[in-house]
Length: 553
Image 1 (cartoon, rainbow, N blue to C red):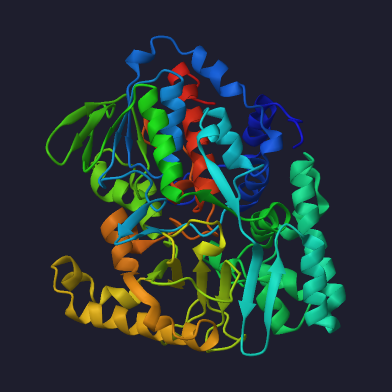
Image 2 (cartoon, rainbow, N blue to C red):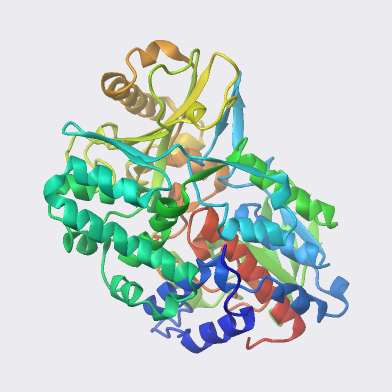
């Protein structure tokens, strides 16, 4: 890995110079689109960060005991933020409504099986997550497994497996399958490699290709290279990871995020994503931080002068605070946690008007035998609408959507107990189709809801049996079904969102217009394991700067 080529101080000065506060009619505080993508490029490269800066900053804060911090929520953003602040000697209290830490980075048991709630693949080793975890002294407690392929894609016209950590192999495989698009395939993936090279070479702000991609969609970028819809299906295979169709997904964002998978390979935290969350939580406790599980934050408390004094939970317990970090959904923050008399109306209006991301429908399956004859880990099975379907799910019938199949036992030996197998089937979903069941669901009247989710699950199993795993239905020992309403129940995320706000929206700042109130979640810094971890670090740094008195930093 390349060493740092810019000090953190220079990076912060560059960000400060470039950051433009949009002052629309509602006074919204967020980075403009151009600054958003430049900041994304900077933040995505661990090679551009001096990892010694935050400790020195924290050392300059005297009387740390006078600056208690309460973090609402224990998702990865909150955990990383809390781990940094507690490591540097600040008094950290975390309130978590669930019984375990992690948000979506969690696992649950059913019979002989331990199911991962969300993780299929991420980029951790030799990337920003490893740098953050090493900085916290926690990476040594974790291990990752590499995915055996980039992706397998099955449609009624072709079945292709793209190799892992092998850009030239991806080009060759696609060129063999689609020889008439060979030139465009090579051009597209070469540009993606150039983006990653620019990031790791410290040339992100000077890269011509990054400037070019910044102003176009993924669909436009692909259209400059190829015309065959099947090739575009392969090129855009990761768009589901980011919750937007190619027509709406920014090309630079896709090049950075997918380029990391292409070049470095996808990885998985062993033995489950819960290990990552538990390790971060233990890091907080090891530094005298406190985590209160099954504890729902009720309201943030203020003086008449609108100064934060603490947080009260659902039992009436008060936790003193000079700063509060919201790892919870921003809509919940503005609607319930902060009194209307304190929350600026412009910020609240912006939070309510922003569009939440898509949600998900997940089928967790514990099988009574290994899956024979298949060595792939992640497999995309096209929906019945065909390649002309630009949406990420079938709006007419979710059961006919494109689905992702993950065979976890092909990742590393011993994932499941001997003689059994673990798999998931997933598709993205909007929330609107599930609102019909919302009232009944939360009143525990779930008959109609159960019929619908079981209908979709049955159809998914039928489709996988036909295309990939004959006899699947007879192998099932344990089955759980998760819907957007399941996401709301366990995480409180508005609309069951899995990425916070829509991925195309500029990030919110770590510091809110309310003095002492900060954001560190997918709702502020973008969804996905890496963005929220980076957001947690960024927010911790901002809190320390403000404690030191750098209110304009």
